[in-house]
Amino acid sequence: MGVGQVIAGLPDLTLEICMSVDISSLAYALRTASEGSSHPLRHGHAMELIAAALGYGSLAAYKAGIAEGDERADLAEAGNLVLNGQAIIDRAAQLSFMAPSLTHLEMVLNAFATCLPRARRFQNENDLFNEIVNLIDRKTLNDGEVSGAIASTNSNGYDEIYLPFDFSLDELPPPGETHHVEIAGHINMEVDLERPYSGHRIDVSAVLSLERVGRCAINVRHIPQPTTRNCGH
Image 1 (cartoon, one colour):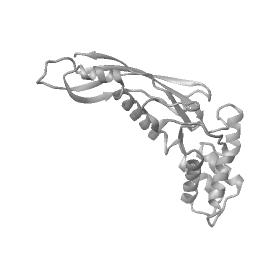
Image 2 (image 1 turned 90 degrees about the horizontal axis):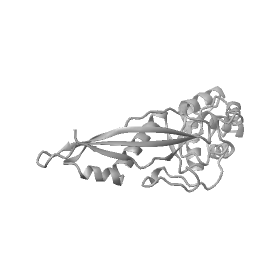
Image 3 (image 1 turned 30 degrees about the horizontal axis):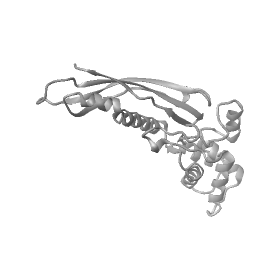
Image 4 (image 1 turned 90 degrees about the vertical axis):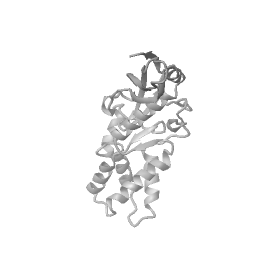
C-alpha cells in the first residue's frame, strides 16, 4: 500500500507510513532489548539475526539483495511479513550465542513488532496465504454487488464460497512492480425449497494485486470490486 492508502472495508490490512525503518533500526531495537538480558547482543550480531528473519543466510547476502534490487532498504511500507523463525535460531547457533535460541527468536520478533507495529507478521508463507484467502472471502461477501445477487436467490444463506487462486513469494516480481492474480469462482447458496427457485450459484471474478517489498515482505495493494452473475443451475 502507498502512503495512507487503505483497502476499503479492511482496516486490519491498512498501513500508514510514518517513518523509515531499515535493518539498522530493527537491529538497534533488538540490541536495546537484549541489554536487559544476561547475554546482550553486539550491533553486528543483531543485524545478522534481523537479516536471517528476512530470509537471508547472512547480513552480506541481505546487502547484496538490496544492491541487486531484490530488496528495499526501507521496510516501512511492509504490510505483511513472513519472518523465518527457524532461520533466526539457526543463525544464532552459527554465531555461537550463549543465550537460549528461543530467547533470540522472541527478541527478534519483538523488534519487528516495535519498529513495524502495523505490519502483520506470519510464521510461514502458508499462514500468509490463508490470511489472503480469508481477506478475499470477506471482501467478496461484503461487496454490494455480491450481496444483491445473493438477495435475488431463493437461499437460506451461502453453502460454499469457492474462489481458487495461487501464488508464491518466489514468483513475485522485484520491488516496485505489481503481480496481478486473476480469480474466478463461485458462491453456492443453500436452496430454500419453500420459495420459487431463482438460482443458487453466483459466479464471481476479481483481481488480486500484490507488491513485493522484500524477499519476505509483500503488500496487498488492491482487490477490485468483484463482478458477479447469478446462475440458475
